[in-house]
Image 1 (spheres, helix red, strand yellow):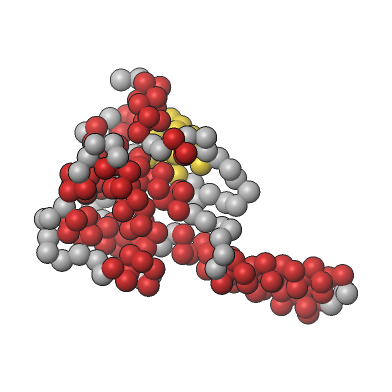
Image 2: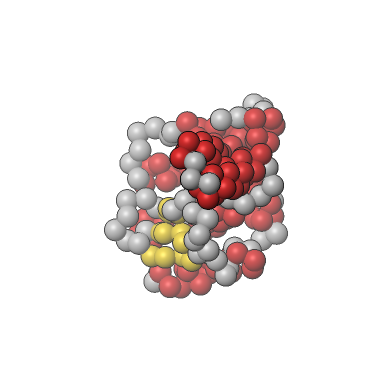
Amino acid sequence: MEPRIEIRRLLDVIPASSRMTTKIVSKPEQPKVIDAVFPLPWNQDRPIYINFDLWLRLAKPQRDLLLLQKVSWLLGVKWFKPDIYQGVVLLGLLAGLVESAQSDVVGVAVGGGLSAIALVRIWRTNKSSQSELNADLAALRIAERRGYSETEAAQHLLSAIEAIAQIEKHSTLNFSELIRCQNLRAIAGLSPVGVPKSYVLGEGD
């Protein structure tokens, strides 16, 4: 199968609202099956890079769920939303501008430092296991609108994560992947033990 044929199919899988910003790019040289660069606030495009030689070793439902999860993760990265850390960034920048106008070097340093700390916190939150778990759940919801049941979708995403580890020749899953797999096993009815809801909702990591 040529990559362009699969790309056209995948664009039909993702939500219509994501198609303007999501770009699926063939990247045969990358060692990962699927990858995406963490989106910075000034970048509107959200490219997803796929090594199609490796990608096509996966079953179609696994590919669908992996793509939906990656799209959901990208959409979940919010640099500008009303919460305390975004507020600190803005206050720090404003304070820095005011102090700069007054030629107050210490004030500029303090304002810049506050902004930097808040930006690091935003970065860490969006790169956490919690954000991956939330992206998994969002992917399952979209998959249900594509004809999968929640249980089926969870099973396909679970098997895809495990299959990628084999394809990429990882000896073990990392911490985030282990947490995600346990949560997906619970959703799929394969395990009575899941991840605490408080963790998924934002108290973990």
